[in-house]
Image (tube, rainbow, N blue to C red):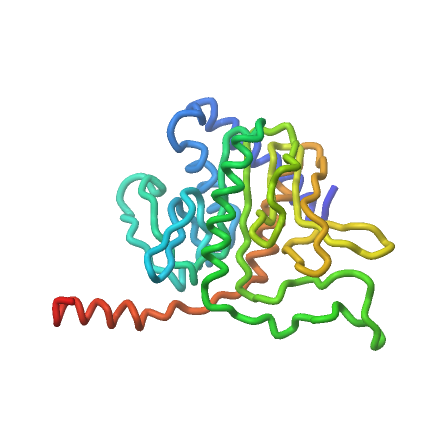
Length: 271
């Protein structure tokens, strides 16, 4: 059992039970019920500073990516969602600077075609998020962690950017298999929750000490995606990993100057 009174195990059971209850009423294969269910679950689990919505990540020039769940900073980004009616019925457009994480939801991932489609969606979101203004991690250790003046032989704990994007794929059902054909680089998802029993995470080389899982992609020590069987605890481990990542991430306030200038020019001069 994990720490804090078995929090991860209890969270896994809560998520599984909640999804089963919803699935008994709604068929997840029809409509967007699974995405909505995950939004409610995330809203229950995440601290209040994190907003949850369905929709698209949008850049200042209007470029869009994504179509599923976005975790954003409610203090940085306004939304146009009405408080009347179903909370997650309308899909939002969240500015790139306000996005902590993007989650691609699939009710079932059991074949390579569905897997590749989810991967493609996540890669497009990550590419767009990497175009935003960078916030440098001032504690980043270029040569790796040091101890007694010497570089250790295991990788850095955190990436170069404090506003590093974090992207996830969540599947209600899966056989836990990851196709060998997937592209593996900085645009690869950081975390995959594949059903109740499998977690897929980034990994890093520890030289002669082997390989370990990591939260973020490391362009120096990266060792690909690692599949781990976790016996019914995938949702708990995955959601706590998500919380760990987005709690470390820091975002830059949105710069509305260009938007204001454009709006003024259009209204006043008609161009």
